[in-house]
Image 1 (tube, rainbow, N blue to C red):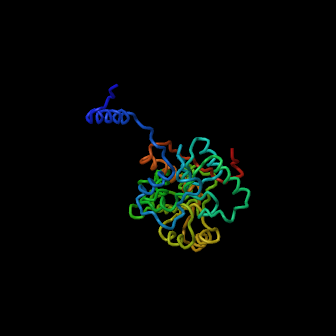
Image 2 (tube, helix red, strand yellow; image 1 turned 90 degrees about the vertical axis):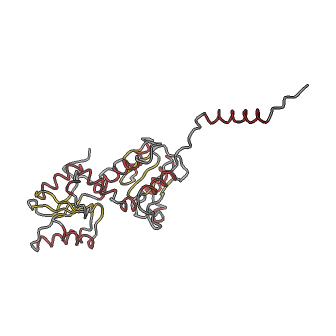
Image 3 (cartoon, one colour; image 1 turned 45 degrees about the horizontal axis):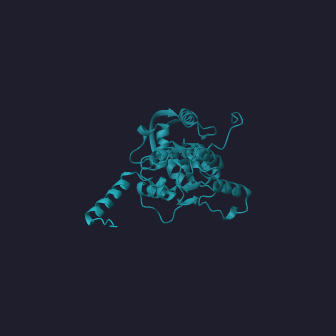
Length: 295
């Protein structure tokens, strides 16, 4: 019996043919992982990543495949449940998951609410990424961009001072009513004369302390913020009015004052992540008024 021994040429052609056949088939792409999403965020946010930051993976693992991404202002248990029910297993939250700015869990290890939330996250296979410092540090600030867009205030913004807005003259009451309507706030609070003329407004989304707030008072008729210590900046503005200087304060609530910034974050992510669905999950406003019960 004569054994067939292929020539070197035939062997190479056969090998190349097999390779070409395999290459012609589309190999299944590897799933997008949590770590890859975070790497893309770091590459696209436009500022160097800080060594000291709260922007870290709080729950889950970098290797976990992503089925969908949800952005939210605050990773409340309610927001996590709604995101998970929608098939989103990577949650990008602006504020903490575990109650402190640094997401420190040591004080809560024996706490039943912490344990319930931790166990829900683990059971549902959720990863949570805290995205605060660099979203604010981005230029322009991601939270401010979203809030300005939501309010429709782009044309009134000062290009040199992004917190400052100049409006055609209105009253404090009309300004507050417009904000309340556009942001659908239940519990906004206003300090100042409702009929006070208003042109210059300074908005500092989120928390504003006394020492940051006092210089703001010199720049504008009205300061808009999320929250502040009532015995500090609120008292200061009360005293300013008692001294004959017409000033006003609009307190939106911390969550509402930054919510639209994370709505915008979902749009921003879509610019460099196409493999999985991306959506925004609004965290519920925590407070309600007795004359407007929660439905």
